[in-house]
Amino acid sequence: MILIPRLNLARIALAHDTVMAAISFPLALYLRLGDAFFPYTQDFLIPGTLGFAAIAMTVFLVGKMYRGIWRYASVDDLLTITKTVTLSILIFLPVLFVLTRLEAMPRSVPLIHWFLLMALLGGPRFCYRLLKDRHVEYLFERSDHRRVPVMLIGAGDAAETFIRAQARDRDAAYNVIGVIDHKGNRVGREIHGVPVVASINEIASALDIQRHHQIQRLVLTVENLDGSIIRELLAIAEKRGLTMARLPRLEELKASVEERNETRPIEIADLLGRPEAVLDRNAMELLIAGKCVLITGAGGTIGSELVRQVSDLGPSQIILLDSAEYHLYQIEMELSNRHPNLVQEAILGSVRDQTRIKGVIAHFKPSLVFHAAALKHVPMVEANPIEGVLTNTVGSQIVADACREGGVSLMVQISTDKAVNPTNVMGATKRLAESYCQALDVAERDGGGTRYVTVRFGNVLGSTGSVVPLFQRQLSNGGPLTVTHPDITRYFMTAGEAVELVLQASVQGDTDPAASGKIFVLDMGDPVRIYDLAEQMIRLSGQKPGEQIKIKITGLRPGEKLHEELLLGSESLMASDNPGLFLAAPSLRDLTVLRRDIEKLEISARERDQAETLRLLSTLVPEYQPKS
Image (tube, rainbow, N blue to C red; front, side, top):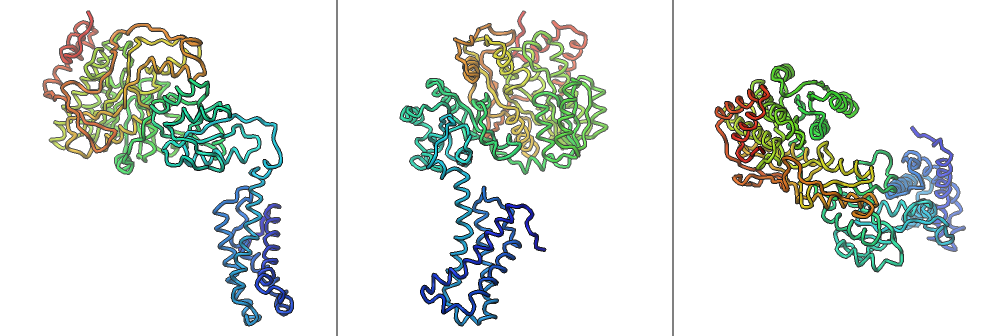
């Protein structure tokens, strides 16, 4: 069915194209015949012209020529024009043959006609877009609107989209002076008339050369630029009094593509960024899809990110368990909005409650359990060691035993780099939890039972116990930023990165017999000096460290280490199938002995005997020695 376009602009376009079609036939004949045109064509000129116009108009309507907008004419529109022009001429030729036998028609006319009509239809569209994009107007008039001169970092598709958007909008905020190529193979070329002036290693000299343009801002257009490079760029920008921003990442674009006109502040995650890990998403989906999944600590930083990513992989049901009512409510509401048709259950309960945990697993019969519940704030656990033992060690044992008894296929234990040579209660309790899951994994795999995968990583950027939210609060209050030691370092990873690799480790641990009894260690990159991080956050706020915002050294807190480690001295590191994961092989403990020792530890903890609890903990984890 042929639909006449309802919009006035579409009708105007149809009228234009029909007129162009009517003109094209006699014009093609004239170009071929010259002065012989009038006597040669008098018999078929008028019926041929009217007939072709009618055929072309019909084909234009059927070919959906008017769904596109001239303002955004593109290659897709050119392809549509090509198809409709070709079809129009192919239909017209047999019609003309019936009327005239084509005896008077020169053989080259259809070819001339095709090129001519392509130009008559495509040319006005192209000129209209040039006009609307202001490429023509800029030749004749100047705007009083002052744009911010910027330099783009990255010569890819995002840079091209940004430059084109700025050129199209008369009131755009930015004037792109040049582009820095992050790969180095496009230097000397142009993107819509904007020169690619240098590679990223030559940015300092390029800024000096372009000094007369008074560039005010560097804009990142590359999503996964290495964090060390971004830190260098930030230092270069600060030295020259420039600000830095980035285009929004693709996943942040919630509305239209035009949002690429906007820039966003550089974030701490950008400074710590690493190349994106290669993930086997098909295997991850195969692990999760159609299965019931239980996540403990579902309201925490890692737990909530696990909920998001697991829910995207198509489980049949998700069980959310947390002891914090408000955090559980928050993630339940978020999951309901994210996947309204996914079956979910919010369970308020503690991993320290054996009856509760066994009952939940027995009732819902999950295939996979991700155990993220833990007390993780080092000074807080140091001040409340019995709570740390009961949650981190005894709670993990309760969950692990319930998984074995409930026939769970796979349990994933989330651990921490503080379990390596622990100097605090939090690390020691997590180390014991690691040991118990390792021993269970070896025992259960031999009998074909539950598989236990332990994943160890460092600090999660932005988590409740992280230094970053503390610095943000201190910045909002005008400082100072407090750092415990000028040389203290930490490993950092975003929650999204960490959970992606946790899921990847789960896949490998589920299928690879060589992973039995071992611990997956995430590649955390290089450790970050916290003092440097504080300075960078001050710079990102547009202020100068040490002048407008002070940094105060407060001294190491109880149980705090100067430098965290990812491996025990006795552990050997093995490469895994994924470059973002390593396998550590710590010494295994006898399950029967370990179970008896943890039972003694639990008894003393539940009796609130702190001295005996710490003594037993230091005996079970010799690296940990409590301060007297």
